Image (cartoon, rainbow, N blue to C red; front, side, top):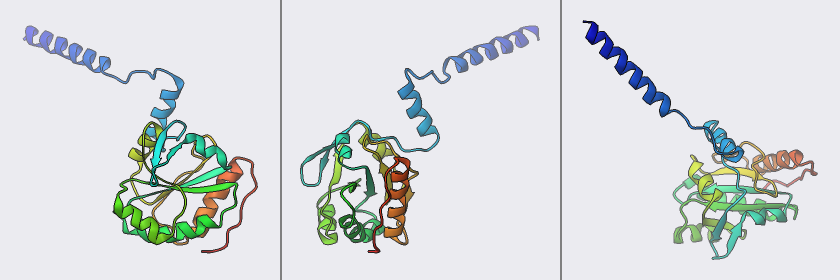
Length: 194
């Protein structure tokens, strides 16, 4: 009986040692720690470092965000009817924005159908269709389309994302943009209804 108790104690000690040894490792640096915290809290990754391709074959990177005070990114899927339905409104709304604000789209599954959706909608802006770095991480974290986020000139996400098709796109997206502009200490905008 004593041998069995001793064996159980040794087994427990070994299992405890294994569990402690397999515990979470500390982050290597502050950036890794911040990313881990964002993921644990369900926040999307910032878009500070990436290169990507657009629907028209051009290159796009985080450096392109510097051309406006804030950028609204609409993430969409050509397999989502609500995404396709809202693209005409996104196109019309985007054309009314001042130069200090840009609106772009990220398509998660772009092919020839996506090209037709953009053409039918009249969207003339940038549509990013593939990329690496932070873009790849960001897209992998999108759980619902459409999703809209606002980023600053460096690709930092300023506000909580707006998920799902808004009832009133002009009101919802303008409000999201204005929250981002306010965060950046910039003047807000006023966009007429689409």
